[in-house]
Length: 559
Image (cartoon, rainbow, N blue to C red; front, side, top):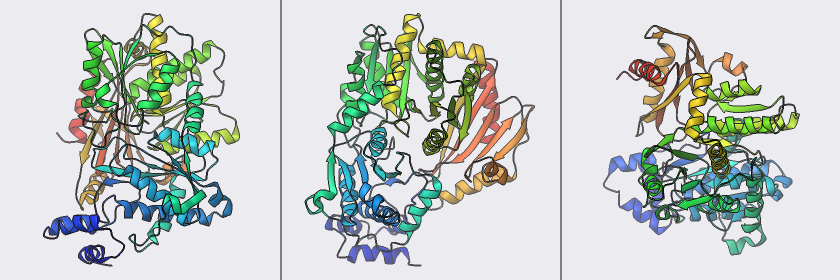
């Protein structure tokens, strides 16, 4: 195995490495730690593809790493024969640094391998990429994005012919192909001109079909809407055009946060583009107070996640992903039931780290719930499998991290759909004199109080993965037995044979179920150097739930 210093020199001396990259590498020539950090390992192609900090090196995101991943994907495509090659791959990108370059390199490597590439003419949201794969009957897709990560990040996600992110058994085949490539620097790529008919630009025609499909999820189009004022921020990302276009066509009164609308690689108008953080809402809430708005919505840069804040008194209350999805679920199921459109044997999908409030709502409507591992690819896969058997119609899918799916013409979380349905539900409940928070309170009154929370612990550096592994194994080998007199009734270890037999792929996740129905899940992130602690606390009221959460945190994170 080569030493990192040798790989560093190979990059510096390679005739295939461009001058800009070499200049960056020369700038760190006297920083041994930085050289080691960049070259002592290769950035991992994980369950969600590639995601990492931009820069030169094998442990960074750059055009050579993107070309290596694409060549591995191309080799996998060719293993699937001439039909796969001819069907081609759809490529889209977000607003990040190097996203346009990476999309072009991806198309160029595919074309160099004789594989057709459908390349979007400009930035598009992740869910539209999923839609386009299905619409164009392509063999798969590539999305260049790092979702809601900081500006110095970018990433690369792969999709199959179903418009679904690659499930593990397919992903592993691609990883095997990537691992057989020794030199990422000499991979052949062709220009768009050289590719000829192998690179096809797509845009407005797909946009129109996608917009029409999104609008088809509307249940009550004729609702009065103009009195409902909605402030929207796309966080400088891909949602700006599609979200505003769909809401405009259906006559919603939308006030855009102008400083956060234009695509911006540096996200200069927002403190944080992640809808899970309070900073993402600061300017939007200023707008909402200035214009006396009722609702704030924001989508992350690749527009697959939706965040919402609702006016209550003189302030705006942010809803968690679990809460907003629960209200959406209640609206969809109640309205479909009222209209006689609710299937008797319908199914809802959510993940093992998603609050159980949605499960209770489904129980009340006779809708079955099926759990998946974390990652919307597992929900997309479930949607496909049930579609094939046609025995359990899909009614909704969501995960706690602000992502949901309403219409299954997309097989990933879709914040364009969610934005429309969230605004529609707000307009509907406004006719009853209620806000979305009022509906949430009613759900708590009916089903019990559910408090969800998340703790993230970051472990950077080369030894970060080892620290995370030791942390998880510590809980696996020495699990807590009880907290404040509430016993842990069972431990679900998703690496165990029992969970594999229950239909789950092996995954390094632990879930501690308390006898009162509360639970804690411990899970290393699949895309970042983090270990995540998810909490679902069940209690009679908010005060009791907060006390229980505090006690559980004292045990699990040893404050």
